[in-house]
Length: 483
Image 1 (cartoon, rainbow, N blue to C red):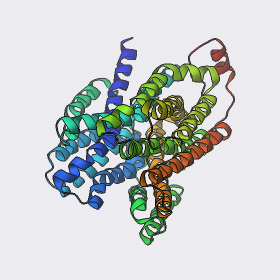
Image 2: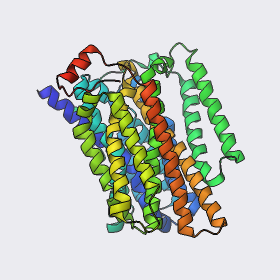
Image 3: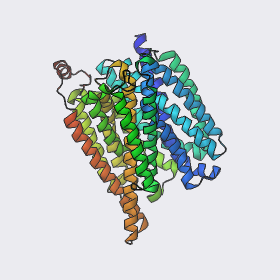
């Protein structure tokens, strides 16, 4: 009983670390206007407060996950959390632009090493299907719903105290999480650096991913067909291609290609890459709709996103696993994806003079319900069929597809929305109407991608339940039927 209690405590410690990372992705966005005024950022330079973090974070997730397999996942988690906490202090005390941007890059490094191994540790701590479903439900809620909490926390801290405190708040949480992780999170040895210490491969992969994320982040400012965008993307693709070729030839690859032979691993990550576009678009463009069209304050935006968080949390933590056990993981995932698409389509009808109760809350509730059904189940499917020695790499891969897929999708949505807005303004449409129409186009494209994800999930990930699983479901057991 004590061992079982300890691993659940370990789960909550790991999720506390994940929540710090997820919060940081959105809490900074709310404080950007205050940071701009205080440190005298230009509009172009201000974007680097976000971009510096994203480049390091997105570029290092895969490498961090594999390092966790080699040297031990708890060691990587603690190292990343320590780096993230110290970098948060540096961000909070920053008095100039260079210091803040540099500290944000280091924060991204720490965030990547912290988050990349968490899902792998959870899967190893909870091998039983029933417990794994519950544990991933908790993790899925934190990973998917923490962003809206960040919007609220950012608004409160920035308004009540100052932008510095969005970073200072990480210090006590980070220290407490490190101490609790040392106490409760089991320390499992890695497979050894000799099993995958491919330094040239690590350089190719990290360089390709960082350059790719940087190229994506440039799109909204310089456009898709600009020489800088195309050139950077070409170099990034070449580096990643060289990495993949090398992994098929070296004796001890950093990323064994056998991982991608699993239909569930490969298909699950493709589904996730498409599915997160809708959620990224909702958080980013939905917040802009509330601020720029409906005139909400930063705090009001955070409060407006609470329905998503509450519903997502309730479904992820309480109802997701029993629903998946009753109807099967794939059907649950497909239903969740279609509900997300329906919420996005409903959001695409939000008017310029909208009201929260009739135009904002209904799509928010649908998005929360759909995400609560989809992402915990999707994470378990994407991790299924993975050998224990590859769990860190698989965890890093799940996080990478979410971050890079979301970044690419958001760049596409933002660019197309801006082009539609500019085109309508040029034809004489009123500014707010044109802006809202651009958002509507983005929501509809995100909905179409989510439907595509549902179709892939229904075909590629569809697998019959075993006789044991079917009997478990018929008996009313809450075990999750694996896809």
